[in-house]
Structure formats: structure tokens, C-alpha cells
Length: 117
Image 1 (cartoon, rainbow, N blue to C red):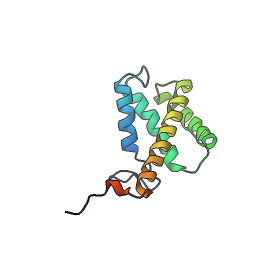
Image 2: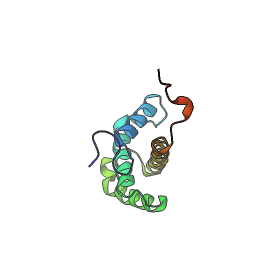
Image 3: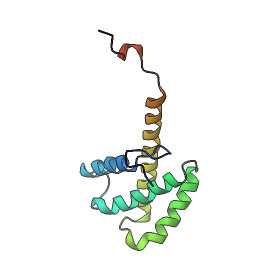
């Protein structure tokens, strides 16, 4: 279950990721379908990523392929497009998680600390 206040225990904030992809779609850079088919696809891919946070991309890809073909009748995005969209989402999620972890564990630079009054 996802933490309602942001990232789950693996550092993946699915709501933030979906908001990002919705904004990418809004500017016409996600694909030719309405957002809902992409939402379904991205949700499936991000759930796999969250379920197996330490899996290799090859392992995730196999799981995605199996999941896609099980749900194919309900998915409007063809497999050739779907696999690239989800792969891109995994890369974005990994990058967002790395940036978030770096912010949390980096010391605050002395120049950004407020001087006492």
C-alpha cells in the first residue's frame, strides 16, 4: 500500500510520477492516445517497479511483458509502444528517487543556513 503522504518505503511516489506523466501528456509528448490508456499502462509498470525495487531492468521487463499480455484486451497502447513508455517511466522514477535520496542525505551547505539575528 502506498503511503498517502508521498513516497513508499522504496522511495517511489506513484502519485508524483503520475502527475509528471500527466503533465508530459498535456504538452503532447507522451503519445497519441488520451491519457487514461497511458495511466493504466504506467500504473502497471510503476507497480512492478515498486514490487521489485532491486530487480534488474531485464527482470522488470519480463514481468512487464507477462503483465501486459495478461491485461492486453484492456490496454489500448500497443506492446511496441508500451514497453518503451514504461521503460522511460522506470528511468524517470529511478532518477527522481536518486535525487530525493541525495537531498535527504546531503548536508545543508553553510551558505544556505540562516544567520542568527
